[in-house]
Length: 120
Image (tube, rainbow, N blue to C red; front, side):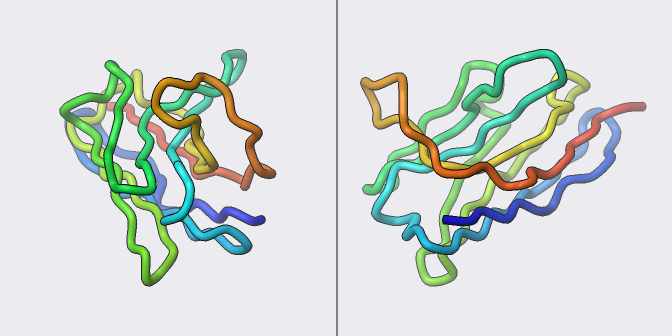
């Protein structure tokens, strides 16, 4: 399984970005998948996930600002991020995610991630 994340960049507070994740060796629509982010010195955290049925869940920190979606035909996962703030600065990754009600998952190999930097 290989994930390739893209779409990150440097933006100012309040701006938007849309991240993409293409997967090979894994059919996204048949798995619970999500977006994670990590800042240096901290654990990687799950910020959004989407179930096989298309139900979405968000971390409180991003609820109302981020939207996760999936293009089944292209086997691509997206994360639309609005009203970005400095606290959103991190490297963003996609991978399998725990199903609702569970907290752990045996993740696949992590991709290189895509850096999001929010600064004025």
